[in-house]
Amino acid sequence: MEFTLKTISKAGIPEAISKVELYRSLNEPEEAESICRDILAVQPEHQLALRLLGLAITDQFRGDSSDRYGEVEKLFQGLVERYECLYYMGLLHERRAKAQMQVGRAPHTLIPLFAEAMRCFAEAEMIRPPDNDDAILRWNRCARLLQSHPGFRQEKEAEALDAFDSSPI
Image (cartoon, rainbow, N blue to C red):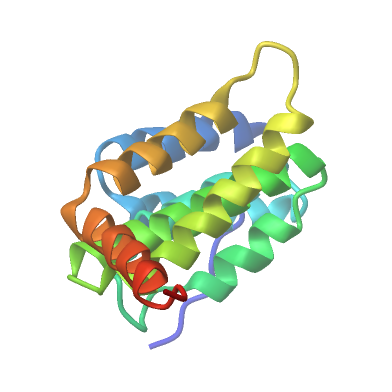
């Protein structure tokens, strides 16, 4: 069965945005994603809708091949402001790593994802708006996660032992 989607009004976009935020807070990312797509059908370059669509999709990450990483990457790379592009790309890498961590992926496969997230956050920090510490907060969260998770600590200890074992006597 095929349906023709109905178009929302431009005047209704602010209310639609508030519904997106509500559905995300209720852990209903599919509903939030649908509303973002309705907004973008009317105003394709709407920056907040692009950001929220990317976040709604990352809310659905499960740590497997069905995750729409490439779609979100394209959305975030299309953000106009350089700070937002970097910050949201960092979130994408962080959320991808966390989803894969939840399904038990080996720490050595996750470290590059966290490293890329932290690189994006560090770059965003350098150009952040005044009084906006979001990139610092996210960088710190990644650092704490890497410091506290036993798998990452064991990985670091193994690297240190490998370096020690390969040093000349």
